[in-house]
Amino acid sequence: MRLLADLGLGSNMGDRLENLQGAVDGLRARGERILAFSCVYETDPVGGPEQANFLNAVVRVETERSPYALLDLAAELEQAAGRVRKEHWGPRVLDVDILRCARVREAGQDKQEGESGPSGRGSGEKKSPYGDLCWVSIQDPPHLIVPHPRLQERAFVLVPLGDVDPEVKRTLGDAAALASVPSVGSGGSGEVRLLDVRLT
Image (tube, rainbow, N blue to C red; front, side, top):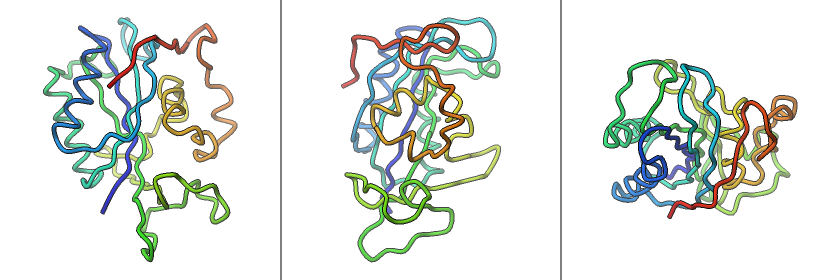
C-alpha cells in the first residue's frame, strides 16, 4: 500500500532551519520519497509557556509505511534531533506531525473503511496529480488522530500546507473554520511570515 502523507515540521530551538532540513534529510535517508516542500515560515508560538518564534514548513512524502509506522518514524526523527519532552506545548528542537495522509488507490481498488474521496464529497471532484487519493481518517487517541485534530485552527500549518496542496481549503471542506485563519504577513496574533529560505 502506498501512502501520500503531509508532514508538518516545526522548530524553535537551536539552528531552526538546520533542524527542519535535518528532518527532510532523515526522511530521505530512511527511504521516503519527497514529493513537495512548502516555503519556510516564521510563526508566533501558539499556547504553552513564553518561548521563541518557530520556523514551520510542510513536506509531502510518498511512503510504503502505515500511518502508525509513520508516527514511529516521526518520533525517531525528533529523537535524533535531540528533542526532550519536558512540558506540553513547550519549546522544541524538532516537531514532526502527521497532518493528513491518503492511500494512493490503484486502478480497480475499492475504498477501505475510514477513507473518503478527494474531499469527502463524492465524484466530480478535481483529481490529484498523484492519482486517485483516498484520504484516511484515524481516531485512536491518544496514539494517533488523522487528520491532525487542530489542523483547521492553525495558520502555521494551513499556510505551508497550502503551498504543497493549493486545493487544501476546498478539500478540508470547512470554510467557516478556515475563514478566521490569518494570512501571510497579516499582522497580529498568529502571524505567519514568509522567509527567503528554502528546504532542499
